[in-house]
Image 1 (cartoon, rainbow, N blue to C red):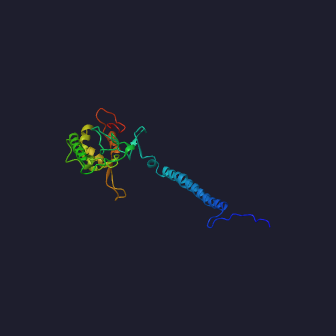
Image 2: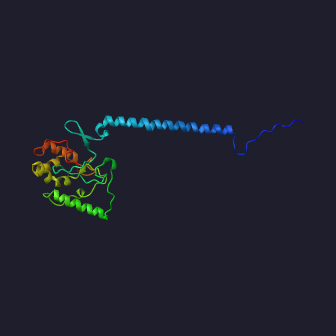
Image 3: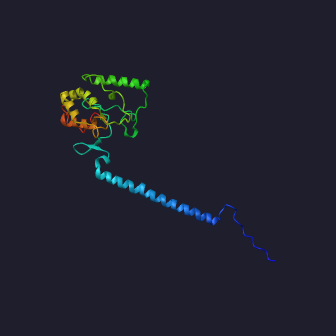
Length: 229
């Protein structure tokens, strides 16, 4: 009687290796295809289409809302504050962004709480400096001129904060404060859609307008960054 060849049987609940391999491939290939399609659609095509539309419809804003002088030289952005300090320019809010402030690579506030002694001492020092620099200003300075903005790069001031600085700017420019206040009113932007946000003045645009309208005595109009540290 011939011996019967032994054929190993798969354990209950376990498919043969070849079948398991086929099942793995059946799941792996669709996953790879889905990943590739998603990568192309969301990582390449969608950004390219959105960038193209933005450049076509909102070219200036898509490029960073850059500001140029009369010669076409880029001197800043409408979206980023600069540290003007000369008396003939409007000064923006203080900045805690970076060691010297106004660093676009280190945007952020001071992160000091209302009970912080460092914050209180800094506000007191800023208040004294403002009063010394603006002896002719009427009333106390708006609080935004005493504290740093949350981003450190706030390009706007409230109309009240700009008008409060008008006497100092007017004295340095050799014009009346009323003419400077009129320029502030001219460059005041209202609420978006009439209801969103608050009225504001872009400091860089306002200082550029100062150089065009009221050049400082004995000095030619600058690009708008004169006086920045």
